[in-house]
Image (cartoon, rainbow, N blue to C red; front, side, top):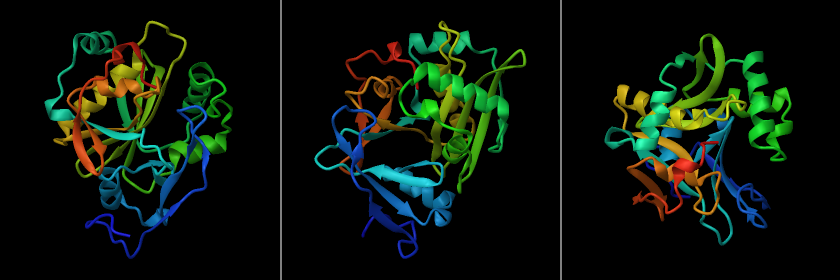
Length: 252
């Protein structure tokens, strides 16, 4: 299989999963292409895989490979060229008082309790609202690449947690969960803006936001951060802001 020049292909193997129900588009079946073995996917190798549309869930590195469907478009924001719109500037100002601190991945009871409440409130019946502690650890706390856990606190109270991977050319946003019981808060928007700002401080080029799916309300918000590029037919191309107003869709 020919994939990348900067990954030792002799050490990596790729296989296709069996079809499974799509999490984002109803009544469709999904498949994934998985890179193995996980312990050989170091940060340099993973950086190359991300540039070719892969991302990770725990130690599981994959990209969509669905039969007859190409709805999942890998998306990255050009951090150095990014300009916030008016709504994003309001969200930034609204939460500018949050205190962010960087940590290694860690199993923390306070984090897990917030994660459970977030899943029950934001994604009921989505499968992850019933995650036990082991599933949570496997999903967020297992990594063979350079990863950070970011806490956001307000007067000492935990408001948001984000897991980020450090890549050769940018940051990859793994997952973010936050306090669900503050309806006027815009933590998801603020978090993306914070990651863009961190990317700039580290002199990196891109914030990888995972997959954009045009007809999935949960994923459509990502084109609201401009300029953005999508990986289409193996080439990173400019993605214009979608007709749906992404500012009305809170980041998951």
